[in-house]
Image (spheres, rainbow, N blue to C red):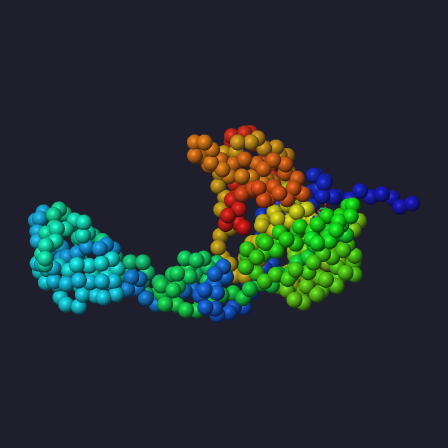
Length: 419
Ligand code: AMP
Ligand code: MG
């Protein structure tokens, strides 16, 4: 009879061979270098893509001194008294400059966006002017330069407007258009293959028998990957069988830059992912000092990066956001800083034991006095997927933290920006 040897399992809080989240992130980052491939795209097709070149302004913006108001363009040297009159000698519209000279004692009517004639340096709003036929009278003081938008005030020719490594947002599309730029280089899209592992998993549309569950991880993974604007390759559900796992992993490695699986990375009797990976590639299994989401596999199969996420639905999401997202961003050349965190008062007491970094699901809200606070979503089990739907942030609790009293400050990481 063979001797029973207890194994370190995911439920073992005393396991010492575990990595801190920072160490795990650093190891992943050190093993990834950005893909060097890019493509040239019309700017509308670059939304959410990663810029692969610095964008240099070919123009001054604005290109001319122009008026910020509807009113009158005047020469400040004419403002000798608190009340003075000027002869109106013309009109400038946006796109239709006044072509002649504005002499001493003269002014022009000017519309917002119209070029300010060289001789004028100040705009007086029309509301502050009494106009009769071709003469206007102005009262009061009007600082020199008032309501003039100066040439190059926003951008000067040669300025770096957007840096390589930036994820392009709607404002950037407008900015590039304002510079007359039609096409730019963006990193090529990543191709990410993913599948779920588990004999108990059924795809939606199939009837369930006792003990079976619907596969949700492929759907959350799909959503999270789409938000990162990668091309996805859904390889379905793979049962806990070595041959099928081997076949699917090899197929995925042929077609994708990155492979992501969920389930089967723990120490259960049907957790074969580990064995297959040892055979097919260079993959490390890590126990990470975090909750949820302790086991994580990371490595390479042929030319593809591999992430083996845990099976529990919340663990999948937390490990994806905390490890896979920064890794994919680096791979696609993105250089933006990580998601922001800040401190806010939590109205609930938080229970936690020291030893693991925790990502608790929580809701940022405004209380009756309009003050932003946070509350937890309640049960924090790693299978409670609806906690991720209800939540709008994580509460981040350090490894050493042993809980928090109600109404004390906690660190939160809002989902917007993260996801
Ligand atoms: P495992 O890591 O394979 O032991 O799975 C841990 C837990 O997550 C088990 O309760 C599984 O049934 C569940 N699980 C694994 N994969 C999925 C999935 N794709 N969708 C929903 N639940 C899953
Ligand atoms: Mg499983």
